[in-house]
Image (tube, rainbow, N blue to C red; front, side, top):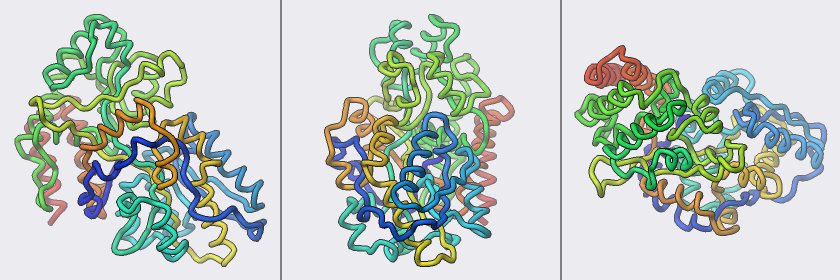
Length: 427
C-alpha cells in the first residue's frame, strides 16, 4: 500500500497536517450543492480499488447506486486490486480515461507529471475549495500551481497490535524500543506457536517499499538526501540487518503480503503487522476488533521520534473530452463522494479521518483515532513520491527488500544493490 507525497508535501509539518484533528471521525462536507437533475442519462466512470475489496465493496456500490437514484446519471465502476489499479488508471488515461477515481496520494505526482489530471480549481473554483478544506490538506493535492486532486482521508501507516495476543504472552505494555520489540516477539512465539509474531510484508516487490522505509528511517537511514541517493548508507544496512535477524529467529514469516497479513490478523493469528487506520475496520469479529491497537514504531534509542509513513486517499478527475453535461456529472459525483450523508458510515466503519474542514469538526475522536493522530504527527512522506518514476523506484527498493527478507541477498548486499540501481536510474 503506497503512501507517497510530492516534494511540496514534504514541506508540510506532519503535526500541522492533522492540527485540530482531535475533533474528527464523521464524513466530509460536499464541495458543491445538492446534485442537479440536469445530468439524467449521462454516463460517467468511477475507478479505484475500494469496490474490489470485500470490506468496502458494498459502500462503493452504494455510492454509485445512490447517485444514480438521485440524479439519473449512470456510474460505471472501473476497478482493480490495489496493487494493479494505478497501472490500469494510467493505461486508460491514454485511451479511455476514467472520469473520477479514488487514488493513493502517492500516485498524484506521476499522473500530474504526465498532465493527465484536470485542474479542479477550474472545475469548482479556487475560492470554493479554499473555503471547504484546511489549507495544508488542500496543498497535498496541488502540483505545479494546479489543484489536481482533493484529499479524501489522511493518516499514516504504522504497526498495529492485537492486544489480546500480547497479553497472552505476558506483555502488558507495547514495546518502545527495537530491543523490546524483538524480546516481545520472541515471547509471543514461545507462548503461542500458532501465531505469527510480526507479519511484515515480505513479498510482491511493489508492495514492500512503504513497509520497509519506516524501518530504514528508524535506524537513521534514507533512500535520498536532497535528491542524492543515500540508500546504501549505514542506517539502511542496519535496518536490513535487524529485519534479517527477525526472519532468522522465526519472528517474521516469509511469503506474507499485506493482504494475507490482514486476513490472518483478523483471525487472531498475528500479533503485529503494518497497516493504516483502516486496520480495525477490517476485523469483523467485535471482540477481536476491540483488541486492535495502533502502536508507534519502536525506536533504537529512547527519545527518538517513532517513524511511520504518511498514507491517504484522494479523489481526482482525469482529463478527457467531455460535453458540458459530462463534466457536470463528473463534478457532482466527486462532490457526492464528499457528502457526509453519502460516505459518513463508510468513514466511520473503516475508521477513516476526513479531510474537509467541516468533517474535522464533526465530533471528538475515539482513543483509537487519537492514537493514530499522535503517530501521524511524526510521520514522513514516502521518499519515492517526489519523482515521476516513483513506481519504478519503489519496485527497485522492494526487490532488494524482498531478496534480503528471503535470504537471497545479505543485508549489506541488499542495501548496496539498491543504492547502485537507484544511482543508475538517476543518471
